[in-house]
Length: 86
Image 1 (cartoon, rainbow, N blue to C red):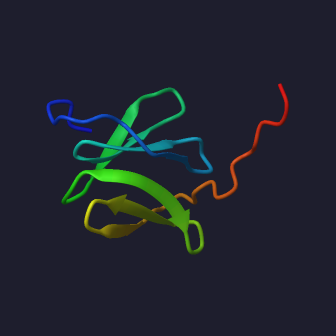
Image 2: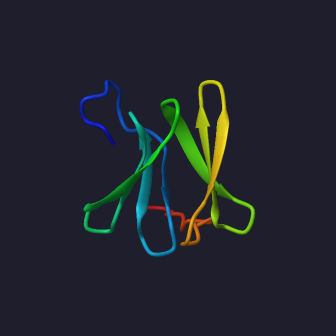
C-alpha cells in the first residue's frame, strides 16, 4: 500500500496460510500473520473490497468502475470461521 496516497484500508480477506489481503490506496496490500508486508497487488484504480472465487485461487477486486481478477498461488479462505456467542 502506498502510504503517500490518500485513503484508508478497507476490505480484508485471508488466505489458507493466514496472510491478510487488504484493499487500500494503490492496490491490495498482502501481509503475513505477523503483519509483515509481503507485497502489494497494484491496481489501476483504488480498490474498495475483495473476495475469493472460482476454485479459491481467484481474488476478485472491486473498484469504482471495474472488477479485477488475479490468480494467486495460495488458496483463499472461502468460509472463514465464525465466532458464535461471547
